[in-house]
Length: 403
Ligand SMILES: *Cc1c(COP(=O)(O)O)cnc(C)c1O
Image (cartoon, rainbow, N blue to C red):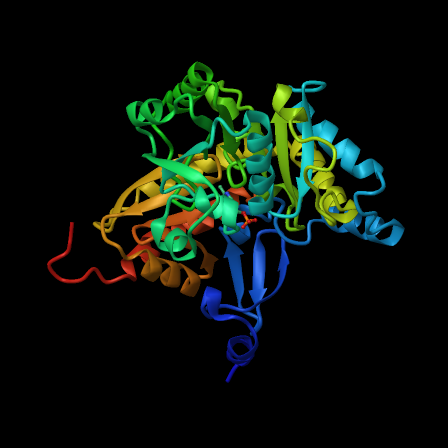
C-alpha cells in the first residue's frame, strides 16, 4: 500500500461514510499546485469547490492568519473585535451599500442561508409562510437550507422540514412569477446554478425575479456562496445583471480556505433580526475575518477581478476548441466554467484529468466544473488547455453512443 491507500483505509475505518472514500489524499499546496500523500503534483483547477480563491499557502493569508492567531484567536460574540467590523464595512462597500445594510457572520454557507431564512421569517411574519426556490438549486445541508435545495434525492430522505417551499424550474420567468404571490416570504436563487452544473439563467432572469418580488412583497435572496468574491470576474455575480437583492449570502471564496460565511441584509432587511434573534459562537471569528480581509485586499491590489475575467475567457475559448465528440460545449463566466459533455461520462473525465495531473470536478454526470484559484496564471491555463484534448481522448465513449 502506498501512503494514499493507507490513509484511505484509516479514513474508511474512522470517518462516517457520507462522502464515500475520496480518491486522493492531499498533503500540501503552493499557489495553484497541490501534492498528494505520495508526492505527486497536480494543478488545482477546482480550488476545493471554489474556496481557495488565492490558491494555497498564499503569503497574504498565511501572514494575516498567523498574526491574528498570535494576537487573539477568539472573542465570542460577547465582545467586538476590529476585524469583524472592518470586514462588514468592506463587504457593504463592495456592494455599494455603505450605511444601507448590515452583516451577520457565520462559519459556512449553509449557516449563512439559515441566517437568511430566519431573517426572512422575522421580516415577513406568519402571513407569508412560503419560500420559492429553484429545481436544481443548492443551498446547503442543514435542515432549513436543505428544505430550499432543489435536488430531491438529497432532500427527501430528511423531511419533513419546517419550511413550505414552492420549487420552480430554474430560468423559467413565467413559473417564477406564478409562484411568487402574496403568501410568499422570499425567493431564494443562485445567480447561476453552481452544484447544478454551472448553469447560467437566461438573460433578464434575475431582473424578472426582482420584479416578481417587488410586485408581491417577497424578499429576493441571492445565494452567492459559490458565485461571489470574484469567481465570475465581478465581486458578486448579481452585479453583472444590475439587480440588487434584499439579502445576499456568501461563504466559499470569502475566507480563501478559512471557514467563514456571511448573510448580508440590504435596506430594511439589514435590521430585521433583532437583539437575541440569532447567533453563532464562532461566527465572525477573528482568524477567519483576518483571512477574509487578506482575500479582499489581495483581489483588489492584484486586479484579480479583471484577471479572472481574462483567464476565464482564455479557458472557455480553449476548452470549446477541442475536437472531440464527447464535448458538447462550455458554459459559465470568469473562472467558474463547465465543460458540458454529450455523454454522462464526467466521472471518467475527472479521473483522466487527475491522471494527467489536473484536479477538476465532475459536478454533474455530464458536466466538468472548473473553478480554479483566481490567481491561476495564463501559463497554467495554457498547460491545462494543452492537455485537455488528450484528457477527453482518454475516455472511451461506449460503442453506439457516439454523438
Ligand atoms: C456550497 C454551497 C452552499 C453550502 O455551503 P457549505 O459551506 O457547504 O454549507 C450553499 N449554497 C451554495 C450556492 C453553495 O455553492
